[in-house]
Image (cartoon, rainbow, N blue to C red; front, side, top):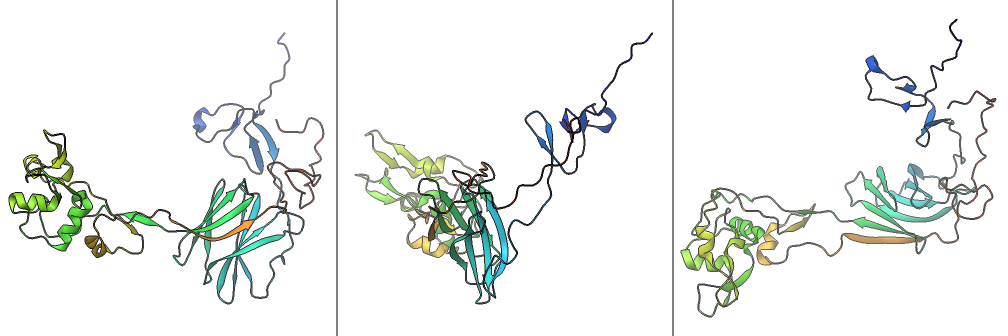
Length: 330
């Protein structure tokens, strides 16, 4: 006689698989799930709990205040609210996740009503504004338990070739401002000891090239090719090395100059060619928010007792479903 047995067809132990062909789908897996959370440790499923109000809707005071955005910043364990008013202004407000949703501090981020988008990078929070103002960068400093609020100046390195109406390998006899900028941006702004002159005087490399050939370098000429160490061990510039390199029609690399993203003033660079424009910092401090003494609930390390790292739970725990033994999903 055939022995009786029991086979479990739907144990779902292999978890959620979304890249498997339905023609060869393995037993014990699912291709789609609704209202379940799959724990990667052991592939145990948990019921995805429903939403409920944590705080009352009238939390944000002010008759003309409007909540534009609200974001839980996991890195700091605080909530970031973006509020607008009728002035018009837009403020950033930090809230603790306690029973009263305590407002810690405000910082004005715009003199207009703007919409925002927020992205988190652990201890950093980036906020972009719809009016094209500078982005806002929040940095949480664990050592001081504070938040630094900065604007971020965006800068762009100039890799473009300005139209100077010259072919790539053309060496002109006259130097226009556009061609001068192209040469400076490719490194020809430097002054080096001239190998072709007695005593090797310090000379702008463009001038050394012109003195040798009565022409200016082309957009294909690389100033680095002419940098040599002569027989006396002195680093000098020899324009003949550049001319004889035969660099063809390929444009030499460029990108010496850096500009604010909203201010491409190339004319200023011609007057001060060695100043590349790169800022020492792109951050401007708007304010510092001190969080010390304001506990905030941390869902990553919950503490229902109200003391210690987690803070007090600001809402009633979600009731566990009335599962009986044997009904849990593995």
